Image (cartoon, rainbow over all chains, first blue to last red; front, side, top):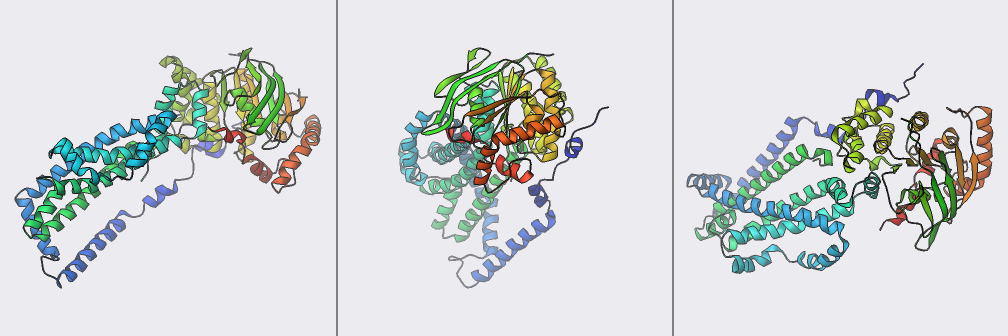
Length: 276
Length: 285
């Protein structure tokens, strides 16, 4: 006689539902509704406060809206968004592509880590804005200087996060891989890299935020296009509402980029432990 | 497909971590295909000794040999099942986890697929092959670990308290299953446990160790009771008492330090004793 000796959970394949998942299922309408309400409230307060000041000091929401329409109609807003986005995505993309292997190598080759460490500790405290002048001298006032600054911002954050990921890989997994016959190189690719994915994604998100900080300063100093340039030139026309339009566009653009990043990574990288 | 496992020999092995002497002068000869249990209280160096056999830890003195060859590092001929299911790769399905070893060794695709299916069936996981480790119960994860090791067809399987983190019922089920799988594969098994009952259910020989630091092999008990074994039969019970008496002093010493006064079988004692299982963590870097 044969007896099924598996436990109930093993037979039915049922395990506890993931609590994080359950929280996510709170009615979507409520969450969206609360956000909309909050934004509406903010605009009302902004409007009430703006009544006490001149349009130059604090333009009202309506005036800002008109400014936005103006900028959309003459194409400035779109071209600014386009210019800034292109610079950010190019520099950020390059930074991620270079930063991940650098972080992996630093994590796996101790002497390389020791050699690069002083540079990293030094440049950590030098913000990209400090390099704006040098970037323009070396790379000219064109696209290259801005892309280079975004790259600089990104590559450190991504490399350091990847490094932290490598150093925190469970020793048990490395031992398991070795005992199963994986060579050091294959362990790096098949075990270490997948283990660091959540760290890489976190680094990429942080770097995206910093890229926005950097692009505005770079464009304010030297650029004929981009949201930073838009914000700066608005001053020359005493158009404070354009400054507001630029700031709001930046915020929305950043939110959009981060949202896309989160959506894509949580859809495609869930198995590596990426969840938002 | 009865293969015969390789013999393992531990000769005058000393293991030290800086100034800490973990294992002192360990000597043990394990025959091919034998099932040997290393029994002793937590922190007594049994996992460290197992890690030396695996090749994760280098002894400062003496040597470990497997099938006559000196062990210098981890090798596919010696598979390791860890206590923690963290050893599974969470981004791979059960099937991909089991396939990992053969894939790393460059085995052909068709051959790999049939080996993976065979060992998934052997551990009873065929129905969960395409699920991820995070979706499995504790017992299923340990089955997956065992299948992953077996897929490499090792001649020696090293098990480091593999059922230590499971609940009592699942544990009993897994012990019965392991006994069957061992007989099917014919591999040599070295099994670390702090559970006397588990050692009696599974071991051809039971090796007791003194409490560490400076742990040593204390006694070796042959155990040739017919399988599958029953802890309630008189011969098992007698061996249980004998073992308990023999290592009782060591167990009591360790458990007293943990604020417990009983040496075996209670789920609390088991949990408490199972917690700091990975003694050799301090070897990291």
